[in-house]
Length: 249
Ligand code: 13P
Image 1 (cartoon, rainbow, N blue to C red):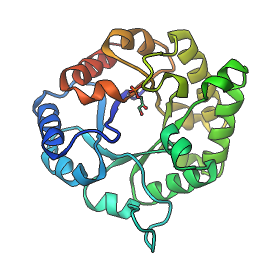
Image 2 (cartoon, helix red, strand yellow):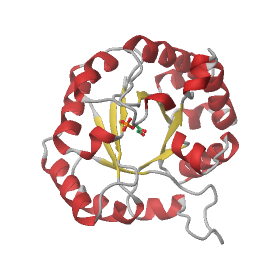
Image 3 (spheres, helix red, strand yellow):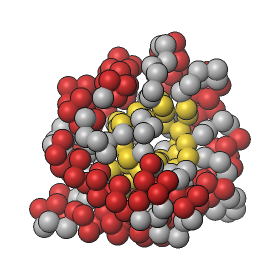
Image 4 (cartoon, rainbow, N blue to C red):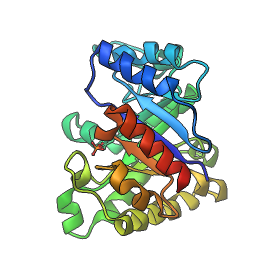
């Protein structure tokens, strides 16, 4: 099964900081068996793609618009990302759902336009604290998956990466226990399998306060194929440690 460690830098790092982090990662020797992705903010994607040329590190966007072009002031399209060497893109992050009112339907359109442009969508799903406390977390994730990915063909589904990010664990220092993560990942795996046998091999990443000191336990889950990392991805040493832990899990 593929393993991926992806760093979501969110709205952090100015040009010189982004340059320093990308350069530090680019200089590090590749670790066998783990695909590494970094998602800096839009202004630094082209620079990151150029600096990382010749390495195995993939540059990812954090978002894109669901149309290829048009009068959408302030937005960035999938073909624009493709033209600067972006090979993956996060979609449906809970911060986009929460602060920018992204619906499952809109996220599904983003997934499709990314696939049309040869960009790997990293599709995020996950329940809020209230939803977990109400015991509806499996239902919520099922609806997010069906709402956004339901219309895809098995061949399209095979190109997607899923990230399970419980909203209550993002940036809070709270993390899902290894058991909570694995049981949701197994649920997501069964949803994927219902699209076709090969779709069951889609990587499912865990995200939410994943750090070097809890990653080994989280990544040990048989259905946990790596991580989508926020805070710990902003530091080269911590991020590299997470990649090493994924390679050993
Ligand atoms: P933290 O690792 O900072 O909790 O963020 C996780 C996340 O949202 C990655 O997309």
